[in-house]
Image (cartoon, rainbow over all chains, first blue to last red; front, side, top):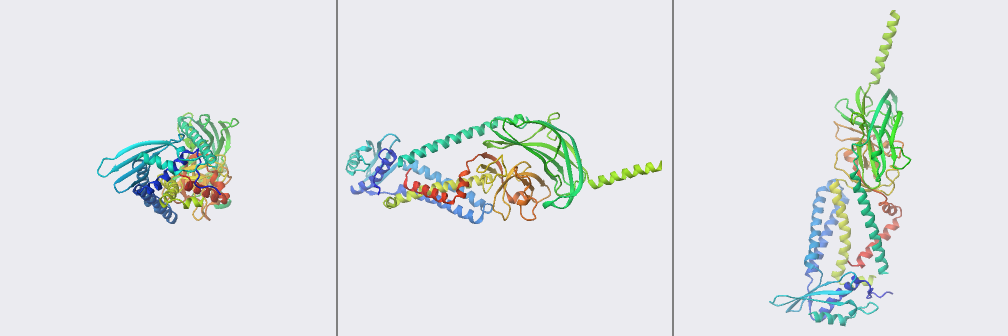
Length: 166
Length: 206
Length: 174
């Protein structure tokens, strides 16, 4: 059987994804509650778009090209509008945010970045205490700090890296 | 396993990107070859034999046919460049309607495929060439309508847009290379018979 | 592999499914968009027979345009005879129009000796431009469509390809 938690250590995107995924559980154990708004809006927009496409497909299949022309014109326009909104949301609003949460008094947002051939994990942490202006901090570390040679993620060093960034 | 498939994907997408870019450039470059004014030619000595006959097969009814022979000279070499796969050359007759229906009619009477290879002749000199296809009208009779002959071509590229054009007369520059009358064959035969009888009568009277 | 899918949190699973669905739906909507612009129910077709050789071979890709109410002699049209569900790509050799509700066409494959009357419906001698023609060929890319011929001739390939595609999109991110 293959070990599902193993990550190929020469693939930067895989290392980044595994690290991104590990952040939320760590914050949960630190007493933070995750805020899913960003993801939910993205999912909502995306599935709304695919629903439009599905309806178009069904109508086209059932009634044919000529009698569905008007409907399909509207649907195609709407679809690409929704798709543009989705792209804008992912690039401008979400912008690499992999975690967003709060622990009562403090709001935390983490965006991550990694270059294709450079095994360095860059994070940008936005911390906002109640009624204060948000503080933005940047930090980076090599992936090898929390991956072992087989490609397993070790939680302790990653947790240390994150708490230090806070 | 991951890196093998990723590498394969990268190579494959690189290959397709290069192939499509080259194809796109080739297709675009064809637009720089002028094709509409360059091919010239002429059609002379058109002979038409007409008659009523039965056509076999699906259009099996008694109707008028025109049998055309022509001389054709043309130089199509300007149409052949590196993105020409073949030139489809075709001779069309265009004639008006007889009544309210079918006011515009175009019928292909001859065609030729000239592939782009060194063995193909791009200059044609045909003498007494017989039309390739039977020429009859949709209503079964010609009733003295006047027809125009045009020599047209379709340049098929290796990749990209298909181009159509009309060969212009080498002397006049006109797209109509020649015209002729599609006689009413019954009337023509009657006239011929009457003429022969008149001649006979004149001979007898002498 | 299924275990790794099950291990995903619901939002992550939804994201993976969404990225797969978006690939499919965007491809479909682009196709529909092209269909609307060209006014043809099938703006790109793959050549299935050798009846237009040497111009078109099996597997060549053709781009259609269907905004002209006419189809001139010499144009290559794709038509679907009513009641027969096989699109045919052939050249127009006769065109009769004027004083009619629609233009009448006769077609023929460059590589065929006879015209297409045999291919039309019983008792039909001419095509109806408006109803039966789905577009005129304006652009050409050789060979690229051969995949679809392979897929239709070996249906199991379709299953395999769809399966691989689905797994790759669901399991891989980015």
